[in-house]
Image (spheres, rainbow, N blue to C red):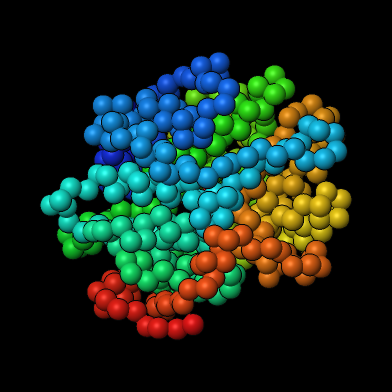
Length: 439
Ligand SMILES: *Cc1c(COP(=O)(O)O)cnc(C)c1O
């Protein structure tokens, strides 16, 4: 299949090409030109995530050089589970745990899939590839983990200085080798702007082969449809009803994947976007005015996005406001409500939620009773609470157990370079080669 830019439908690329480019040459995002349709009944009852993935994604990779490797790629990328766990009460609520990968956040799925693809796209004569990634927390760690040690590929992780939790920062700066970390004097939006500028800058294109691993990359987004497929199929088989998902959202990569999965024909009913105090999307749905703004820092820092890139993909699939409004709804949760929800989640359900997952739980609590009781709701849990222990532990009054994968990362030394939020500083720092040591 071919993919087209959200800005100019004439600009198209094949699957592997779109993954390697990251952003389309006109600055748009790649989206599928057509939607294959899948039948829920065609998936076997106990099919693995990797098996569902290779069948679901096969039409997208058809005729591409990567097509013959797709089964190997999904087996390599999806080698940890994404369980749907029932949550007390009425029995109609469940949680989709996306935090069982190497860096304990859902971004491991997309990052590992993309890395497995890009590694296979490289030939012996390929120029070294630089992956630029802007992160407000979890992306950087997931991408670093997925590409660490891969020959011929270098990763530059950009994060906003002082705006990620100490635990997050450790995971962004603990890699070394082919992964370098830059703490940018600015916000996440500045980091994202730098990446976009580098892509559109001719000199950068000449100097190095660039790719992006942000959720603007199709290779991050498409694989995320796989866990929605698996989860919705599991719910459908167990209860004969379509699942509705509440997705903690920032840049909208995870939510668009859920919407794409529904478009592919999977048994998904509602999609609710749970946002923190960054209300650009909620305001847009309320007023019809798209007014991107500076991001504000919140407890759910991986969702601190004031100008969500993947809105372009949402508008590509639903050009009219009325269509968008019937396709999704949104809810805004401030820090006070996040804190309160983390407390009640623990007290009432024995659940320990990261601040992002807590926004979804709060969004659920705010649904009208009729809507809540009429649906099969699935809260999407995007990260393990141990990644946000500084926030979570004081609220629940106990320590959060650290999964083994994270404990290993926390034990590594860290290094990182501080830069200004402009392209010149990034270019100089990348050229400088070695980074300063620090702990
Ligand atoms: C990235 C992230 C989000 C937001 O996902 P988007 O795809 O940017 O909307 C939510 N929660 C966690 C833990 C994340 O890392």
